[in-house]
Length: 443
Image (tube, rainbow, N blue to C red):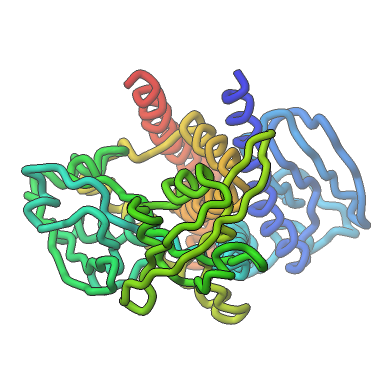
């Protein structure tokens, strides 16, 4: 029950934040374009909270169904326009102004992603590198020569620093080329190339959720222990360790990830140990006397290190935020297109149940992970709304373009037909999404 409540709460919070961002884009740009806003609502249905404010007496609402939102502009098609509001109705403003307002919602979703990435990057980019875990025998990965423990530093021609970038590159090359060229690096910084080749008929099946790594034949491995955030006066700094050192062993015990490092260190408080590490591709050793602290009444060893993070500064963080938003947007569009052509499985379409589960899991793992989840959903929301479906922003933009070319609005009959087609398309998409959600629960 607690988990279900967490999922529901995180889902409502995520949807409310992203809908507020999207609708605020329409709202603020509409006001800049001289349009009168009648209502700004987060959620659909009956308002459960309302405030009326501003010279236009705009209604600001939170409504009962938290699955969307809307901005209602003054529009002469809904009724007569008062003389004092002449020229402020949505359909009375120039067509370019209407298009800008319609584009503003998706644009603010992309802007949210850029700003969120920027904040995350300014806080430092953790050096949690993608690594190869266990390699299955008689698999595509084994045939390519992948070795457990190696880091993936490049997929194709693009460098990767984390699993999200590696995963995008892997899927992109898999679907477009039936092969995945990689550059791998061992503990000493020695690099080599490997190519995973997959038969064309097996590609679509590997794009189903949760199938990719098992299908390729290797598991994502734990990231190497690259240390940072060394604490003043603690064992690591006193022993001469530096930010960016890679710890590979404590005494005779191999260290493969931070979990194993913590397990070894906490078990021997106050002990003198030999720390084996790699710096500048050279293996070195130092002696250190571990610190100790009391946690829940138990003595624990303490080294005084954290994850290494690349602090890249304000300007480079912003550039990286732009690049990441662009890459994820392009990847999302490519995956949507490949679903339509059958190259990528439709099982990747997620509905509210699956999104709620992801929201809850990300919220439990920390604010940074939850913000990363919001970024992905925000980009997806922006792209979805740009599709040329009449009930979405993209479809309304098509209506405006037709009016610009035609010299007059589309007939009411044509608009109603378009709305019906759009609703059918969305219902079809929602049906796929709900089917996928239920199928995942029953698996």
